[in-house]
Image (cartoon, rainbow, N blue to C red):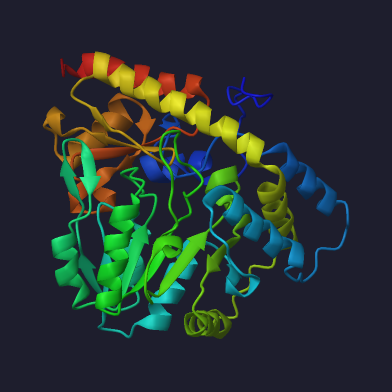
Amino acid sequence: MNRGFDFDHEINRAATHSVKYDGRQAMFGSNAVIPAWVADMDFAAPPAVTQALVARAKHPIYGYTLFPDSLYDALIHWMQRRHGWSIQRDWIIPCPGVVPSINAAIMAFTQPGESVIIQPPVYFPFFSAVTQTGRVLIQNPLILHNGRYTIDFDHLEDCARKAKLLLLCSPHNPVGRVWQPDELAQLSQIAEKHDLIIFSDEIHADLVYPGNQHRVLAAIAEGDTEIITAVAPSKTFNIPGLNLSALIIPDESIRRAITQTFNNFHISASNPFSIAAFEAAYCEGEEWLEALLIYLRDTRDCVTTFLTQQLPKIKVIQAEGTYLLWLDCRAMNLTDAQLKHFFIHAAGVGMNPGIQFGKEGSGFMRLNIGAPRKTILSIMQRIKQAWHTEGYL
């Protein structure tokens, strides 16, 4: 129990059309696995969010809906209070999720055949957003050294000479890095030098563990770096199914171009329920979030201790942010296909294979710890049992 919020409470999500649970058969070939893959949590949303949704549902007309001033105010105050970034109302563009926004940015600022930079191992829609729009993928792989990932800036400089757009993941999914101010400053300097637009996916910005601090790239960038910042309450407050995010873009010409792209596709994010939840989360969800971060930190540390002491061939890349743990399984000496088979069929655990995040993820697995600790410890015990049964000791 944390400050009145019971994150240990187990909620049955079966038969709710949950991708995470009801999609197990399609994803893993079995409904028997404990799902720890798709990035939503098994915790109830903040009470204020549920109350706001119930109150809105009581009005029996769910028609076309405007974005109220109060929605913009909620985001403005949140960014100032949590991240020290003063933004203006005109900078905000509500939109239906970060992934559609990435695609919109690619179409708005590049032409087919032009290049976009990503930094693998990275969230897999970054790859498809580039390739499926006919753009050229340039990869600037992160460097893993002594259990910590960093950006290869020398290589990035070479990449920037040939590209129009960089997709940044900050905090990084799946490796859990929270980029430091000096790293972000160097990134923005390279972008400005080469006239490179940065799409900064900061959807995990609020999910940063004690002892770390997220810095908004656009807030510390110098000069005229053109930056699109994507934020959302979806990961923070476990409401991704409501599909409402926002782009924050200080540059008017960039705003105009991406708005035109959205308009061309007649995309609207104005759902009366997502608006109610968005406001309630940012206005009244902070205490819930603070309790969540402590709970997730303790779960992260439990997993790290368990694996270190009992399954030392699986190493945890220490997460500074997100509720996703990047597990280094390379010491098991299995192919990616064998690794996937071990976790699904021997251990009965459904995680994302690391190879899904690029070839740099070979030998890794991504574990979602956004669940009651009892569930996560059950996952650890299943892996341990399979480890003994399969003879990896």
